[in-house]
Amino acid sequence: MMKSRSREEVFFKALMMGSLALVFLALTGIVAVIVAKGLSSLNLAMILETPKGGYYLGKEGGIANAIIGSLYLVTGATVLSFLISLPVALALQKEYLGKRFADITRLALDILWGTPSIVYGAFGFVVMVLLGLRASLLGGIIVLTLLMIPIMARAMDEAVRLVPFELKEMAYAIGANRIETTLAVVLKQALPGIFTGVILAFGRGIGDAASILFTAGYTDEIPTSLLDPVASLPLAVFFQSGTPVPEVQARAFTAALILLFIVLVVNIVARLLGWRFSRNILR
Amino acid sequence: MSKIEVKSLSVSFGSQQVLRDINLIIPDRQIVAIIGPSGCGKTTLLKSLNRILDLNEEVSVAGDIFVDGENIYAPGMDVTALRKKVGFLPQRPYPLPMSIFQNVAFGPRIHGLDTFRSGSDEKAGKKDMFALVEHYLRLAGLWEEVKDRLHAPAAKLSIGQQQRLALARVLSVEPEVILADEPTSALDPISAKLVETQFRILKKDYTIILVTHILRQARRLGDYIVFLYMGDLVEHEPAAQFFRSPRDEKTRAYINGEIS
Image 1: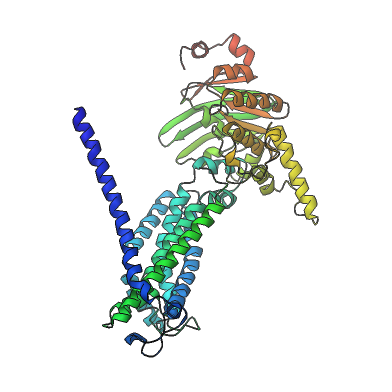
Image 2: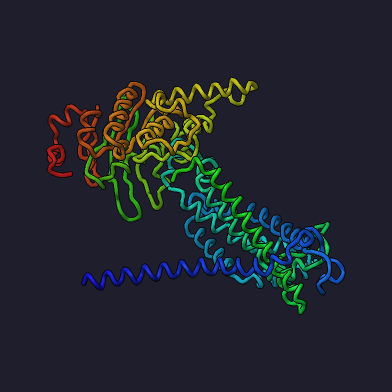
């Protein structure tokens, strides 16, 4: 009896450790391949210059158009989806929406979360054709916003739901109304989780290629207006790895490296900010 | 002099009836202890008195409660004003996610009790709020322990200190009645004693309604005792009479520790 129980213990421990090892291996593997293949082409020109004539044949230039383009796209989309997701997450509290309606909303958001991004791209494209718009920064921002809202809203919703009921009761108990309780108590207590939601959606948004393929387009220029087409890092990776020229293929990995670096920096900054703003919360 | 009058109050959660036809008059400026076995509806009765019970799902309330002669279950009742007048102290203190200072200042601020704040002299306003915070922290018996770290997170306080901070927060909105739900049950004996001491001081100016499952605490603090059993009000009378000559068989059994 004792023996089989301890064998069980050993087995599950090995299973957990093995899975953990696999996760770390995958992460380091991805980073290692991208760094190894992308570092050789990484130089100032890659970051600061737009593609010159013959760039796609291995000549001069860089991917500043894609870096700036991605930052434009994802900054716009993050701001817009934040402005929409936060009220949605707060409204899902039982004080505002009934439980039934809130659960239906959650289901809808979950389905949207699971919808492949190419579907968003196709949908955005159809709408833009109807409106007579061409692929542009504005179109890309709107479709990315749609893609990011379900992720951000649901992550924020989970954070808001983790606020203990008794804590809200404390504010109500001294005569605070719903909005005072929400702003002064719920928002503060849920802040780290709200940050996490923003980061999660940001990561999905900056890395997505399919949704902006038709809606944002691609260009070697840095856009000067919301109606100009715009390049992006994921598409820079996609297009460059599709060329037969080895130098250009290596530049695809450089683009991936820069993408990875941006995600890393934003993650770290957001975590530091979240930590800074959460010193008052109850754990 | 009666402060609160409960008339044929019944409360159910969904299909389960928790309180049955409670009729009760609560005297002014005394400590009223609500006692009874667990699950008898003590907390429900307490929470019905400032309608914080409304926050629960599927709760239905029948009957009337009058505070200073005003029916608090009348349609159009301003519950925020009611809860300002009838404060609630919970079993476990949950400090608001802010500094110690802000925890006390929150209530006066939302109710506009810091009258100088909107005035032209910003400095005078701040000083005024500071005086308010100091006053209520003293009233809750916490000032000496926190005066040097008012801007530290309230979550860093010990649980006993957090409970007195919760008391300061309740007092800060100038209530007339304090509802306390087993306020010492999560505390160590020394902190519990501090809270009890504070209650004895406060009853000069406030009506305190205390739910407790500790019979000794009811004896120590209670001026008036309300005994609930399985959702029914069994007996209520001044403490001396209640403990010396209980009328009901169940009361006698409870006081003697035969049921708990």
